[in-house]
Amino acid sequence: MAMDVVDYEIFGSEMQYVEVELDPGEAAIGEAGVMMYMQDGIQMDTIFGDGAQPQGGFFGKLMGAGKRLLTGESLFTTVYHNEGSGKRRVAFAAPYPGKIVPVDLSQIGGTLICQKDSFLAAAKGVSLGIAFQKKIGVGLFGGEGFIMQKLDGDGMAFIHAGGTLLEKTLAPGETLRVDTGCVVAFQPSVDFDIQYAGKVKTALFGGEGLFFATLSGPGKVWLQSLPLSRMADRIVMASRAAGGGGKEGGSALAGFGLGSLLGNDE
Amino acid sequence: MSQAAPIPARFYPAGGDAHGHPALVELAGDALQVLPEDSPPRQVPLTGLQAATRGFNHSQWAIAWPAESGGQHMLLIDEAAVGPLRAVAPALFAGGEGARRRSSRRFLVGITLLALVPLLVVVALLASLDHLTDRVVARIPPSVERQIGAAVLARTRLEGRLIDQGPAFEAVQAIGRRLARPGETLEFHLTERPEINAFAAPGGVVVVNSGLLKRAASAEEVAGVLAHEIAHVELRHSLRQIVRSAGLRVIFGALAGDYDALGGWAAQLGELKFSRDAEREADRRGLERLAEARVDPAGMLRFFETLEKAEAAGKAGQLPALLSTHPATQERIIWLREATTTAGGGPVEPLAIDWRAVAGSLR
Image 1 (cartoon, chains in turn orange, brown):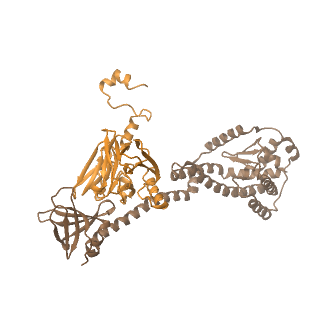
Image 2: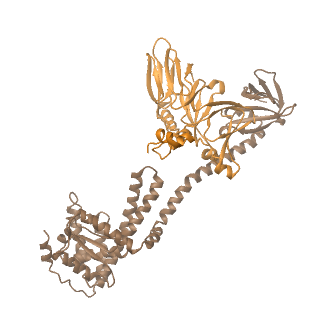
Image 3: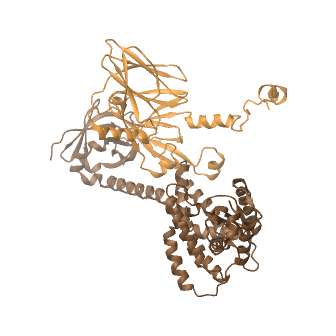
């Protein structure tokens, strides 16, 4: 599998985009709908599946597309070719606040398991597959579901994590207990499991749920501080339309006249 | 000893850093030769090794041996690359293989249960739907039934004028009185609509369309239809159908999720089957009632024959509404012909109604 080597630069702090530089003839693939801008000379081409096996035949393409459908992504991927004569740039923007994680697949052994929906862009030749979680308990309670995404290849891949990113290398036997939903990606050598929180009282009132996700080494893991679902829950809770109140930041002062002036229009 | 190509691995020496070191592994006699990229080679006797699967879906092998300084050295090898080593030392990998098999068996059993349990719940609910419907219907008090009947009647009024006087109205009342058993509270209404139809609503409400009277050739024919509808009332069919279709909608709704239309179709299919069974039962009970009231059952048969003709003629145009949820008319006629001949011979008193005047009063 011939990978295209891409140079990149990440811009922004909390809401990032990544600019990928393509040499003439090079190409990158992007998740549908994440392209931010591209320079003259870059040709956009929408393909069925992930474009990793150009000679895969119709059936292979269909399989690739089916896998993408399972991970909740669009059936199509977009390929950005540099048809010009010089270096050209194309940028992909993260869809919600967080960090873009550049991963060089050749540095980590060629395979990365990541949360579905987290894929942003990659060098052409990286194949996007599904990794079906075969531990029932982890699939049900691990926070990432049964279907995860597998990136294979030896080029650059860009995935996206919510909030702030933690990248950690676990030593053999080193275990991290993680709140479910915070796992973004890990190397296939990492054991991803769940652990009962231990006490019913903690489970009910601790606000962390019944289970932790556990990750044990050796291998690299990437964690996100703010899963999109959690942020979405908070936004809905705070939304007046959904019956929430603007309760946060309600100081004593706000409780008197100021609150009714600023925060309350009922 | 086979001299296979070296196997790529990652070496994690005891007390080393978390990242590990790329290494190559090959077999040298009874020992494993570990060649880390950036440290001197090591020889480890095969007997001192322990292997276990680990990682995502058991895709990796961890081969460990005790270090002199305490702790353990570890080698991480991808499942895809471990083949030659496994061929030479199968015993080393047997334990891990067993664990992997157990895990995949657990997965299969678990996923099957996850899929089957909701399906079984639905099947059980469907199987007990008739029973559940009976239980629910038995708990509905007559007052609620009367309210539903009144609501249905109010809707009928919106769709077509109720005829509440004149010869046709009187004729329907007279036939109804003849058919009613002592103590039964039944109301008969006549509505001005052209379709050949009659229906029973909860609370003893029977509604006949004027179109049906126009097509009927005698009072006995109308009596046959009314007897059938009274049987529906007696058996609380429309109430059962309301309860049942609500139940079906809940079940199929839960099964089909957001696909509302799908749930609706499936529920309608279930209702159709139900209504056909109910119609057959109403035919039988209606016939009994006719015999009790000494009305000639041949009228019922004749009316169905009239219906069949209308059905044949109406294929392209207006299909009699009475047929839509009913068994095939042909089938009913055959059954009725048989039933009237076997049950026939009872005493019969003609209905004293001037049918020509009734039909004439309806334009």
